[in-house]
Length: 209
Image (cartoon, rainbow, N blue to C red; front, side):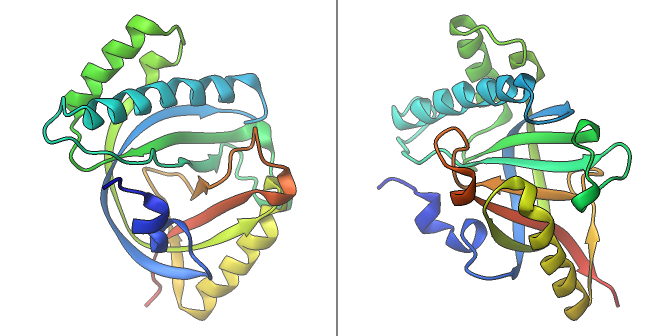
């Protein structure tokens, strides 16, 4: 039976309200970047991640890496911060620093990833393929919610999360190094009108007491 994250991991990816939960160690393929994500470079980086993700998916489906296993590729994610400290309504997009990623099934290994990357390099030309990395990371305790609408309207949703942090006596911790928050893109910006976009906004947190 095909593993579908929208059904099997709803609490992680489809919160119906602001939610606190604890996440285990997960595997990702990642690329780091800097600057305004509206520039072509960001799309090129995404275009490097997906061929590797689909190659791994097919290798598992065909049984080339053990028992056949079929799953839906996970949604694009990104962790974000800025080089100048700007945030919210004062965000300077040119100063953004990010790491974008696609989660990978637990049964895959870094060796599987490296073999996949070699296969993809033989078929496709993308300067960012050499920048893809395999990372395992345990985010632990998080606070998250779904933002509905354009990315530029996210400050209002983050303000709501900040209020919940105070009410639940939680504080934000950096994630995956020194990034300030995580976003999970449930809709494809190439095919979805901005007002219909859905994005999980997530803070890694710890109790203030």
